[in-house]
Image (cartoon, rainbow, N blue to C red; front, side, top):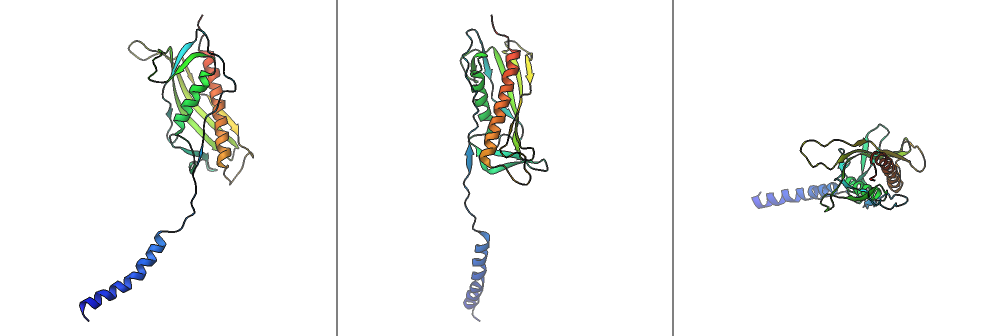
Length: 217
């Protein structure tokens, strides 16, 4: 058999195999749109700033491992925390929680101003915080939020500044429908419950700061 005819025959045998492989490698999957949710709890009522209040500098919020991802977090029945791929916050949780904390404390009436790094205002106090928990537990039927917070004076000398207060504010909120097993909480309900839990944690932080910060006379 001539060489050209043999090559052509091998090519003819390979074509059906290539076509079959192409069909199996690219399965048809339905498109699923990503849902995004806002995390911006507001203090129920804004209080006016005091006339002789102190200026608080809120440093950039840190986050525990895994909490910098945008996906909504849920606790599985076995205790493992899973992160949703199709349901997420509009920005990484540390950024959203930091902004919510700044707005909440500015509306608390404790401080004359709550500033961010780079502000021209000279702070009297410094707040360092870390986001420890922001998740929904369907089995328990609750959402949980937790923070770790340090209150420091504005240091002007060398050495470590003394700590004015160390707080662990936490908050919980019920999930609509109560405890459930084997079913996930709908994303919109989960996001709303986590926002309410964060609001409770910020309210606890406000109480801690109100007790720790002495008003000027």
